[in-house]
Length: 242
Length: 194
Image 1 (spheres, rainbow over the protein chains, first blue to last red):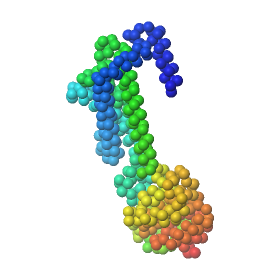
Image 2 (image 1 turned 90 degrees about the vertical axis):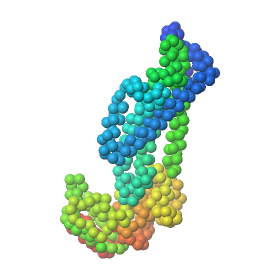
Image 3 (image 1 turned 180 degrees about the vertical axis):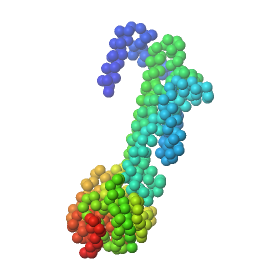
C-alpha cells in the first residue's frame, strides 16, 4: 500500500516537473504545503465538517428511503409498479439537472443533502430489491411450513440474504454520495462548504488549492468508508451470533 | 383417519399421481416406499398442504398441525445448532433444548454452524428441528439420509415413541423393516402390516 502511494506520488512529481506549470499541475509538495496552511485554520475544519455532515445526512436519507421503497416494492405489486420506473428515472437523470432543479425548489444548504440522497437511493433500492427477490424459496417454504411469524421469517430468512446486497450497496453509494454532494456544493455554493471552496479555486486560478480540497474530500471519503466497513463487519458478526 | 380420495397431482406437466386414493394409519410409523419418481415426495407435500391437488380430496388432516422434514436439510447457514432448535420451540418449551440436542446427539456441537457439521449431523439436526416443532402428524422425507444404521435404529425407536402418527418416505428396505406399516407406491397403493 505504502509502496503504491509512493509510486503514484513519484509519477505525479515527474508529471508536474514535465508540465512545469503550477497553474496546470502543481507539484505534490506545493499541494501538501497548501493543505498544511489550510489545516491550521478553524474555517478549514468547519468547512470540512459541514460538508461531511451534509454528505453523511444525504447518505442516511438515501439508505433509509432505498430500503423502505425496496421493502414496499417487494411486498406490494402496486408499489413496485409505481416505484420501479420512478427510481429508474432518478438513476438515469444527469446529476447536474437534479442539482439545478433542487436549487430552484429549496435552500442552497439543503441541495447537497438531497442530491447525495437521490444518488444513493437507486443503488440501495436496486441491491436490496435484488437481495429480497433472491431469497431462497426453499427457506421461505420452510418458514411457512414451520409456522414462523412474519417478523421471524424476515429476521431468519430474508434479512440474512439481503445483508450482503445491502452492505455492498452502502459501500458503493458512499463514494457516489461524496462525489454528488461536493458537485452540488460547487454548483450551488452554500456558505461554508468544500464544493464552494473548490468553485472559488476555479475563479481565482488556485490549482494548488483545488488539489488540496480534493485531497480533503478523498481523505474524508476514505475515513467514512473505513467507519462504514467497521460498522458492516460488526453487523455481520452480530448477524452470525443473533 | 387421514384419507386421500381420487387425487390427481402433477410435477410441472408430468402427472405424478392419477386418481390416487389411500387411507393412512392413525398411529405408529408408516413408511411410504417405492421407486424414484413414483410420487412419494409429492404425496408428502400434498399431506403437508405445501401443494394442492389438481383434483380429489384430502381429509382428516390439518396442515397447520403437521411437522415436516424436507428432503433437503434446509438449515440456516447463519444459525447455530441450538438456535435451529430454539427457533421452533415455543416460549413455554424452550427448556426442552437439551433434550432435543441429546436426541440429535449434538450436545457437544450446540454452538456450531451448519457448515461446521458433517452431512449426517446436519440431517439429525433437521430431523430434531422438525420433531421439536411438534404437531398432530409428522411428515418426514428421507429422514435418515447420511445417518448410519445403528443411529437409524435408535431414531426409528424414538419415532415410534412419538404420540402422533409418523409418515416417512424412504426407499431403503431396512427402514421399511423397522416400520409399523409400509405402503408401496408403485401402481395401486398396497398397504402391508409388518
